[in-house]
Amino acid sequence: MLSIEQERALRSAIFAWLDDKQLAGQYEFTRDELANFTVGGQRLPLIDRGRGIRNPAQFSSTLSIMTSLNGPYADLLDTAAFVQYAYRAGDSSDNLKLRRAFEQKDPLIYFEAVRTGRYVAHYPVYVVADDPITRVFTVTMDEALRFFGDPATMTPDQRSYAERTVKSRRHQPAFRAKVMHAYANSCAICSLKHVELLDAAHIIPDADVLGFARVTNGLSLCKIHHAAYDRNLLGITPDYVVRIDEELLDEVDGPMIRYGLQDMHGRRLTVPRRAGDRPDREALAVRFEAFAA
Figure 1 (cartoon, rainbow, N blue to C red):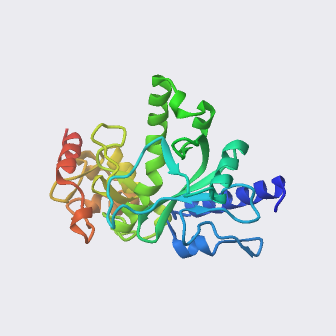
Figure 2: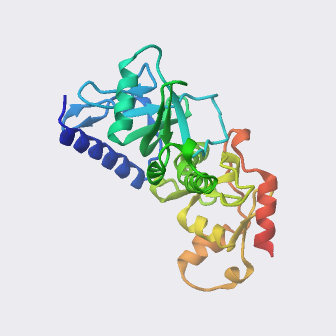
């Protein structure tokens, strides 16, 4: 068994590895990649191949939990502030280690399945409630919310704050992973394939009541086209045609403006191969109205 300091150092090293991967543009992880993770030359699987919970023998408490996929193309992402994790049958040691994570306030990783064999990582997450009657643990999806304690005792204002806080933070990694996969890690406008320079852009902003966390409300765009789209310098018609702002078309300001934006005027969007992942035409129409205005 590791000392508390050693265990905390390993958790920090794992979080740093996840940070580095995401900074490089990687937001989804394969089952093999997670199962064969190494640190300090030693193999330390981050998931258990046969169960939804990972409890390394040398750890005093749980390292990670993961979801299963509801379907091969589950599209609407979960943005709940809290998730529940049922006890394992009987008096399992898994229950004991998850209870210790609650008692010791240890940070965990929550791996969310986005498609078969692929996961996004939410971290750190914390167990904030343990109900031995219903045999359910409650996990908060945002570090700041752990200070509110058991969500069952939260005031309506606190719960509203929790839901607003988590909506954007939680869905972004899964949204990005699904959009990047749908568009084959390529900008839908210019076909740039450097994933670290690509964003998962929303058609209808996620803050809007219609801004669903769905792939069909997303576009894979390079950073310059994402910025231009967000600022209505670039529009996309419901028929998937790119339009550039008229004033910008007349501007003379070097090769970036010319080749990066002006030459995109009239270009057809490259859409996902799977029809169910293609941009929603009604959402594009709503957004294009704002551009045209």
